[in-house]
Amino acid sequence: MNSETSLNRQVHRIRNHLISAAGSSDVRDRRAIEQAVESGMLGDAVPEVPNPALQQLTSAMVDDPAKSDIGALRLAGFSDDAIFELVLTAATAAGHALLEQAVRALDETKE
Amino acid sequence: MRLSNVEQGRGAIGKLKLFAASRVLGDRVPDVLRVLLYRSEFFGRDFARYTNQLMRGPSEWTAGERELFAAYVSRVNTCAFCTSLHCTMASNVVGTEVVDAVLADWRTAPVSPRLRAAFAFLEKLMKQPRQLGPGDVRDAFAAGISEAGLLTVVHVCVNFSIINRIADALGFETPSATTVARLGNILLGLGYRF
Image (cartoon, rainbow over all chains, first blue to last red; front, side, top):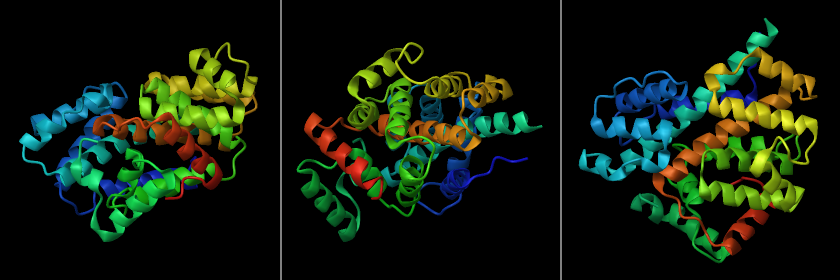
């Protein structure tokens, strides 16, 4: 049985849009940090992201978002619009990881 | 706000919305509104709709209880801006003493066993997500929380774990107490419709 609800669907839609919509950042970068943040949120080793500035953003989002180094992203060539997209994607990935864990626990209760 | 493009708004309509919001609030527009209004088709429009349904839609939890969950999640995430705003709203509904007691230690706070069970679930989800399991769900059900009610709790955690991270990563400024109170009254009365 699946615990799908309207709220679940809305989160999935927001997340899917963030990792697929055209924007100022490369979709591949958004997908990479999304997967890395989701892994990190669940205590797994954070997969390597192919850019040190993105790696720093990923680690900060998992451990301490206030330490996100926006200046390093700029120095790496990301525009402010691209940084906006990357931060939203990384933050949403963190929330999505928690949702998946909770839904899994709910579904296991019904098995 | 660490991004000047978001600070300034985009396009005539975006800037007009910021101007209108500043007139209503009588102060600088809080950064959370700037993020939701900036290129809203990318994130803000859908996220605001999700937040409004979650925080003000039909639920077995009152709006005040949901704000209390939001304040707790924001405190655990050490997000000063969101903690301040949602503590203010929760205090308006359930009282400052209850809010302070929950944030100090929900285990000893003067709240119902059902509410306490919700905080136990929230704490496990936030601090040990991998360890969350059917036992935690059954504990919540045993305290009188329905499946729909538990999903609301989960989504408050999801929603505010997202916005807390955005706030901290982008360096949201904490508005004055007057602006927080005014914004809190608007959000309590009108909901999260931007």
